[in-house]
Image 1 (tube, helix red, strand yellow):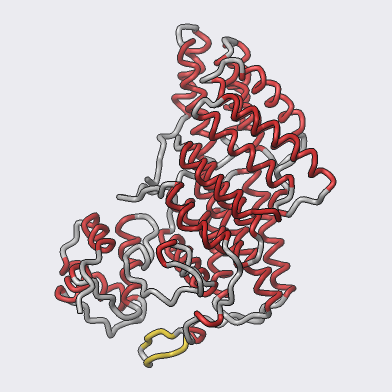
Image 2 (cartoon, one colour):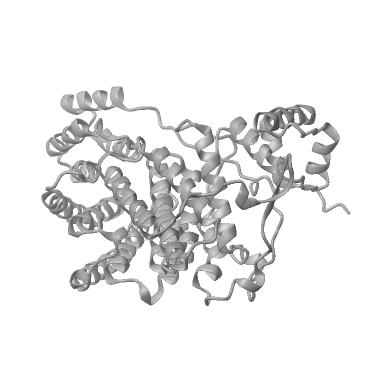
Amino acid sequence: MSKGPNTRLADLFALTGWSKGELARLVNRRGAAMGQQQLSTDTSRVRRWIEQGEIPRDPVPRVLAAVFTERLGRVVTTEDLGLTRHRPTRPGSSPASGGGAWEPDRTAEVLTEFTGMDLMLNRRGLVGAGAGLTAGAVIADNLYDWLTGHDVAYAAARPGPRKVITQGGVRPLADVYEPGPVGLDEVAALEHAVEVFRAWDASRGGGLQRKAVVGQLNEVGGLLTHDLQPAVKQRLWAVAANLAVLAGWMSHDVGLEPTAQRYFVIAAQAAKEAGDRPRAGEAISRAARQMIHLGRADDALDLIGLARSSSGEQAQPCTRAMLCTVEAWAQAAVGRSEAVRRSLHQAEELFALGQDEPAPDWMQLFNEAELHGMEALVYRTLAEHDPGAALLAERHARLALELRERKGLERSTLFDRITLASVHWLSGEPEEAQVQARLAMAMIGQTSSTRTWDRLREMYRLSGRYRSLAPVAELRAEIERSMPMPRREF
C-alpha cells in the first residue's frame, strides 16, 4: 500500500539536477565501491521511493545518503532523505513531540551516521545548496518534552537486536563494527582528549581541529552502539556530549551553521543519556548564541527558555549565570535596555554565589574574564540602541583584557579587542578605536575562526561614519584587503 510521496527525498532530489536514471546508476556505482555489488537499482525503483514513499532495504539508504552528501556538499543523512523506518516510541511519549522516539540506541546511530557523512565531505566551508537553519522555536518544541520529562524505562520499547543486510545474508549489526575492550581507563583517555581539543579551540579557533573532533565523536558513537557496563556507558555519553558541543562550536566558528546546529541538538540528546541535564542546557545555549550571531534574537530567546527548563534545579550558579548572559545578549540585540540590565545583574549575583562551588569541566572557561567579556559584548550590542551602554561596554572589555593574562585564550582576547574598538567608534573616539582595531588586526591571523572576521566586519561597518578621516580611510582599506569573502553553509 502506498504511503504517499516522500517529500523530503523529492525536495533534495530536485536540488541535485539528476534524472531518476542518473540517480539509479549512481546508487549502483557507489554501492559497488562500498562492496555491495548486488545492488541493481533502476529508474522504476527510484520513482517508487520518491512518488510512493517506498523505503529500500539496507544498505541502499546509506548509499543514497552518501551520493546526496557528495552532490550537495553538506551532510545529508538517511533521516534527511525520509528513509528512516520509525521505531516504537517510549512509554508515555508522543511521536509528534519530535523527541519521543529518541532512545539511546537511536541517538548513537544518528550521531554515528551524521559524523560519518560530515567526515566524508573531507572539505571545509563549502556552501550547501538548500541548507537552512531550523527555527529556535521548532528545536525547543521538539526537544522540550524529551529533555524535561520524567525518566522512563526504555527496555519495554526497545526493538530487538538490530541487523544489516550483507553479501552473506542477514547478520547482527555488532558484526559490522567490533570495538576493542572499553573500560574506565579508555574513557578517561577520551576525557583527556576532550580537554586537549577544548584548549585548542579556545586558543586558535575551530578550523584546524574540527575534523579531528568529528572523527573522535564518530568513534565514540560507534562504541555507544554496543553493550557496555553502565558506569562506562554513562561516562561515554558524557564524552559524546562534550565532543558534540565542540564539533558544533567549531562548525559555527568556521561558518558551517546548519551543521553546527545539528551537533548542538545531538549534544543535548547525548547529555540527557548521560543523566546530565545542565550539560544539555549548556549545549542548547550554544545554539542560542549561534542564533544571535546570525541576527535571529527571537529564536535565541526560545532556545534559552529551553536551556533553562532542561537544566532545572541541578544547574550550578555559574551555569545559570552563563545562561543569563546569553539571554541578555539576545535582549540587547533587540534593544531591550531594562531586560539587559536585569539579566546581567542576575548573572553577576549568580556568578559570585558560585565561586565556592567547583564548576563542571565544561564550564571551566566561564571564569571572571569570560563574564566580563560577555558583559562587554552585550553592552556593545545594546549601545547601538542605547548610547549610554557604551561606557559600560568599555569598562567590562578592559576588565576582561586585564584578566586574560595567561596564554591559550587568544581568540577571546581578539574578541575583546574588536568589542573595544567597536565601542570607541560608537562613542565618537576614532583615535582610540584605531588603536584597538590595529591590535585586533595584528592578532587575527593567528586563529582559524570565521567568527572573528564576522565581528571584524561589524566593527568595520561602525567605522564608516569616520571614513572621511585619512587615517581611518587607510585602516578601512587595510581591513578590506585582508578580509576574506564571507562563506556560509546556509
